Figure 1: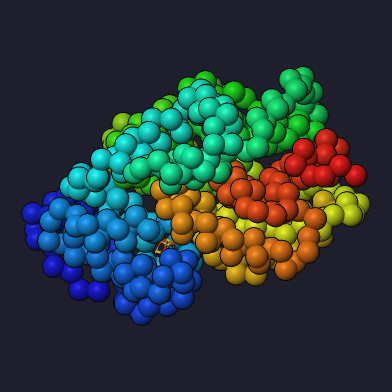
Figure 2: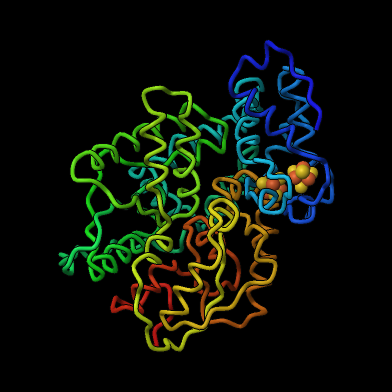
Length: 433
Ligand code: SF4
Ligand code: SF4
């Protein structure tokens, strides 16, 4: 694609990077076929190619974002399906991240929009606040129809309530885990922000499984939200602050005893942490440390695949494997989780249209609840055809999104199923035998 940036504009390294990305696009349009929003809306401007044109026009002209650009960029899920499809290697993720930050700096949103975005940015990334908000949501859940009727923000508040689980998740029992010998590795596990409040059982399962496999988990004081939630809202400085705090926390461990991996049990966070090296490339104090952290970041299934787990007897359970977009498109992890589950004794089926997003996408299911609901129902319809006992997934956002749909089967994290197969407790979400 030809571009016409001024020399002055290209003095900005972020602009130079975007120009490079724009030049790799050859307008072929292959990406439109796998874009969920194009699939739903049929509008070229809601396709990757259309958005690329809009972003090019906005950045090239150095103009403030227009209402039209904001509308179509906001509708993008950042699912990255277009990156998997694109034959020219267009790095849409870095382009749309830049566009969102540019929009944040140049566009004044409506007051209700600003309110909702500020609310989400001030609550979701902080585990204590998230827990308090979850508790409030549980109390308010029965009043969802009334909340939905509130002017301006009612629809989005109601979408938030719909995502809250029906009851507060029980904290996992405090376990004294004996690490099997010989010790095979020393790792940190990302605790993050939303997952410990919504499903503390996920990391508890990873810790149990690791202990049995001889993997020591060391705590990383100071670690927190990966920054993805605010990053996708265009709040670049907030996202970089979260990234720096995590890089500091893990660097202390790397330089005091070493780490074999930074294990992540939420693929949405994994995609962002693997990008820290890029996000902090212009920060002389952090660039190298961030690149080292990114290189150590591993999805839990990637890490487990290096440990040669023994085959387990059939578990008598048939699963649909839901591959989160951040897993398959963001990190290109496709077969590993399914292979681990099959080796652990589960029958695993692929979901038709597995490349299409379930509508979760960070805060998308709150901010764009109508489109997100349509994508969720489409995904659940595809899952229903498989007639399975449960769904396995590796991202808390997808688990919450799919579980919020009517008639959804139990949705369980892959690592909880693996822990169960190798001697741990039966996952809570599964019906009792
Ligand atoms: S598939 Fe790639 S090169 Fe083709 S239009 Fe889409 S982004 Fe551009
Ligand atoms: S990231 Fe997903 S929603 Fe956004 S343009 Fe690409 S395929 Fe479409």
